Amino acid sequence: MAAASSTVKVVLLLVVLVMVKVLLVLLVKVLEVLVLVKVVVFVVDEVTVLLVVLVSVEDVVLELLFVSLVVLLELLEEVLELLLLRVLLLLLTVKLLEVEVVLVSVLLEVEVSVWEVMVAVLEVELIELVELLVTVL
Image (cartoon, rainbow, N blue to C red; front, side):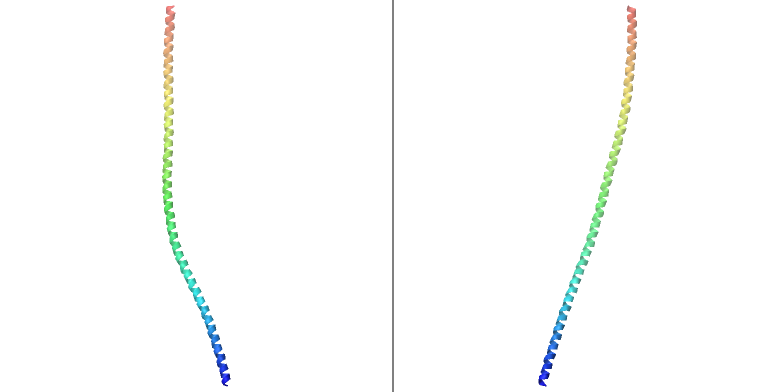
């Protein structure tokens, strides 16, 4: 009986050792799961921080884009004003050319009139010369 009781004790000890080993394996698995959960929580925290940074950067980028757009619109306004001034200068140049054409045509008419007067004076002088010649001859 003593031998049976020692065998039972050894078997019980083996069962306890197997149960301890199973519990240790389960504890290792639980620790692995806890480590995985901790890693997942860390990654989620980091992703959250990155998202916050991205949102902040997005706000800054959007603000920079808005400022750039405002500056571009102001530059476009300046360019349009300069183009308008150029068009006005071209219109003024055209008007000045029209005035010059009118002045040249008036001067030509005056010059033609002067030539007509000179021709008339020459005709009169020629007639007088012919009359003088007729009288002399």
